[in-house]
Length: 256
Image 1 (cartoon, rainbow, N blue to C red):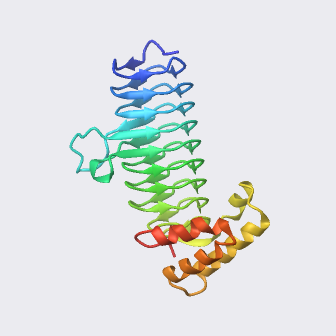
Image 2 (image 1 turned 180 degrees about the vertical axis):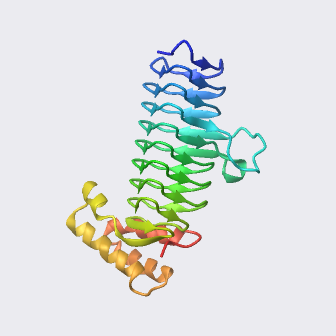
Image 3 (image 1 turned 90 degrees about the vertical axis):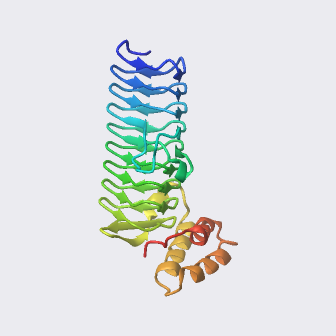
């Protein structure tokens, strides 16, 4: 159902099973998949592709121009997957040519009120991004990450899978998988044990990850030395593979 006060651009492609609330505006070059619910007073501008089963609450701005002075009107893209919950007053900007041309949100994410996701961010699957968290440009969030309310992530940083930031964390470096951080500036304070247990990691796996954390953060090894040791351990402890791979590929340094 599309409310009679909604404004829909003729070029928009909207599935028959989409509902759009009062006074929402759907711009040109927007695609919205089946079973999406668009609340009242939502603005979606394109080019933007939205998958199936998403729910977008009131006053959100989705697909607006990137807040980047280099942007000069290029037809960059926002792509949102399936089954995401996007709460009130969330802002998600399209990408820039310099950053690859796309901002991308995966599947099954829970994005709470007043979150900002800037240009060229890549957000994976099953993440929880709590109220008033802001992602600067070019941030990568992998999978199963929890970002506490009012977390701030500076540009070009990467947050590894199963990581957790406490409320009000200010993050200026990459966070490896499994690591829990807190503070201004954020510091590592341990392993996201509760999150791992909720994701059905075994006690043995959690123990192995704790040992890996100690290897990286308490052994005195350089990051490259720790990565080599983790790579060897991951041959028998496969849960450490993403930790090792992250250390090998990260740029700009990890939070320490």
